[in-house]
Length: 185
Image (cartoon, rainbow, N blue to C red; front, side, top):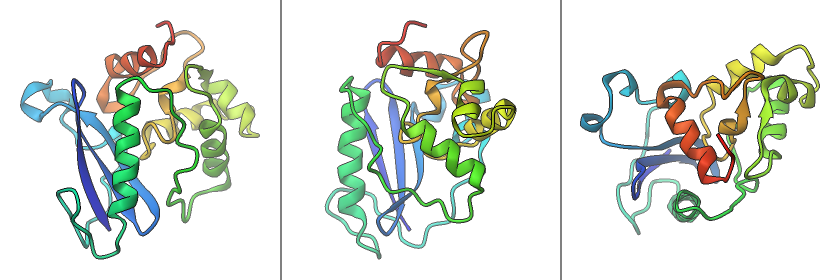
């Protein structure tokens, strides 16, 4: 496993975790712990479990982890940084580690990765498009535990009566992401 941290001006520091060619985890950029509210200090987005332990950690450009996935991580980091600077990008080509996921979870991932930049769907729409029209609560639960922020864009899912929530990062973070994409919030 390889972990690479990356800075994004005005957003904070994020991390990507790779195992070989596949993305295992993406921590969205957030300010240092001392500069945010205590309620948001949990290290995972959306209340999901912690990422798996590392076997190989790298900290800077040009250094390679045991599995050689640093170039892939750096390529993704450049794209993520460009996204957070306002560039309209898609991440649907990023290979994800989805071993052991249920058919419902896989369907939700497929649908979410097709929600275009600057557009939103409701939790009900997400469930319906994933082939489970009465599973909007399950779709919300999936989003709350999403470990691939931006790559699987749960910030583009809203409640039928408002924005919904955004886990430990909070509603203001979700509003900021949507505003970055030009969605009126």
